[in-house]
Image 1: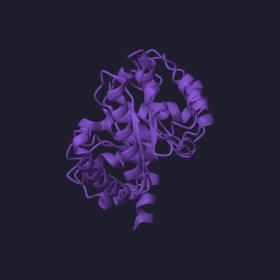
Image 2: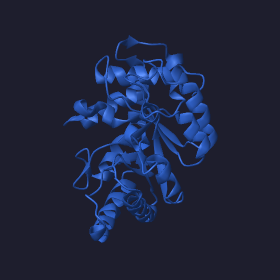
Image 3: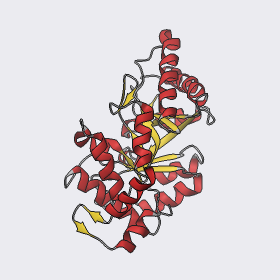
Image 4: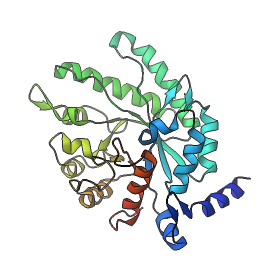
Length: 286
């Protein structure tokens, strides 16, 4: 049954949102393991996850990053059921954004239990990474060090279930705390075997720094990237994606995910245009 479904989707992928395209072009694009952060389709997904997953598969995306985990479910589905739906469409869930509990040191044990359950659920869904998408901005380095220690502890818990724990940046993590850049401090005060960074290249640049410099300086710390632009990928002309991909491959990138937060078109059209940009780009190897 799964093979029949894959064959159907392979044929259906020849039909794009705007009409027919060349089969040879579809086959060429399908080689690349282009990923999508499902937050890009957050409004369309509501009560509609299975249909959206099918449309994402037809566009050609091969890997996914989730962004909805509540009460032990992913987009309202049991983890194994979600994995089955994704796998049946020829895609893989590689990563997930998970906010986690409100943390304070006096509730450390409780927080670790929460992450234990979250990592078990996402392991059942097929993920390899759990990424915290944001955090409060501490006022002191001592307070930030508490968060770093928390992240190391969380990484130990998720590692026991086969998942790497990490953090996704916005622009504000490039502000300084007591004369030190917050993002750099986090990299220097976390264990690379337990904690990684998912570099959002657009927010890094918006924070005033070149993402290529970070990829070269902290080699191996960025197994995941968010490929983002002001709207659709490549739309603004401000992002040097060629240099970003070159540096990302060199430092050991495992996966990357398109994330579109603002749109010139419908969200679905925007994620398709973003896919097409990367599929046609000679500097994207896989």
